[in-house]
Amino acid sequence: MKRDIISMLDVEDILGELLVLAEEMKAGKYKDQAPLKGKKLAMIFEKSSTRTRVSFEVGMLELGGYALNLSMKDLQLGRGETVADTAKVLSRYVDGIMYRAYQHAMMLELSHNASVPVINALDDVEHPCQIMADLLTIKEYKGRLRGIKVAYVGDGNNVCNSLMLGAAMCGMDFIAAVPKGFEPDKERTGLAKSIADKYNGSVEIIDDPMVAAKGADAVYTDVWVSMGQENQAEERLKIFLPYQINKRLMSQAQPDAIAMHCLPAHRGMEISADVMDGPHSVVFDQAENRLHAQKAILIKLLGDTPEEKQWNQD
Ligand code: CP
Ligand code: NVA
Image (cartoon, rainbow, N blue to C red):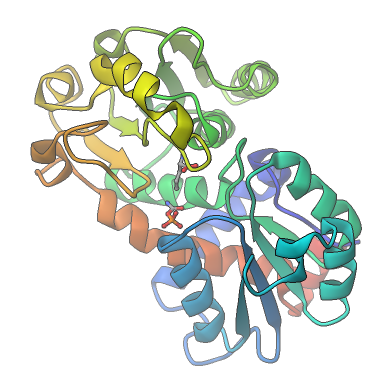
């Protein structure tokens, strides 16, 4: 049985293990040992990417494997071949498929039709790879995850959905301040609340950013206009103006709070330039940690060591 990571929900049972492996990878585990020697990863990009594209490609290279970058221009998918057929064909050539998609439904379609592991590299509902890097970053700065308060401010989007689930699984106190009508996914919010109960964490959705940031250990934001929402830009920019992470908002948080953003960022919009480039900012650590976290994911999903084989068959 193959394992996919489509949602943070797919890693609940092994999140702790993945984060430890990510820390070990960062410290140099398997350096020069090529644990994924001969393994091939197909990377399908329907949308732009800097961090995801480069960290997956470099990650595969560092693990001794190979990554194929496939944009819509390269694939017959861009000319109408179905996702299902693409999944079946690629499964005959490669050991894993990483997919950045517009629609979550297409992600699920690929996952159901591929016989090799599928990794969600962002769709309109989740961005699990980002959140594993973010949890690693918070752990590095705060020394632990349990009991840490993370305030997400802005759009209840893909990043917010995955962060909410990941925080709940780690026993964190997650609070999101989002404008009415831009709340995170309802079903995931319900699930995150039950998961948080299990791990003594909490999940709360409100609309006041100042209240959310109060006493927070980490304040997180993301763009107000996600890829695919460009036609709503004008309306969104007006609605989200009060949701900027700036010095005033950060002053509500703990004095040593970290300011987080998955990037790419728009200074002067969702985050002020002085916070983005100031002492609280850990955004470039988050970006670096994409590489380490994804190497852990790749070893877990594509690896052949007895430990990984067992995990994949469970
Ligand atoms: N954070 C993130 O996923 O960045 P890219 O869109 O550059 O991959
Ligand atoms: N929410 C953003 C994240 C980019 C990494 C988007 O989907 O465009």
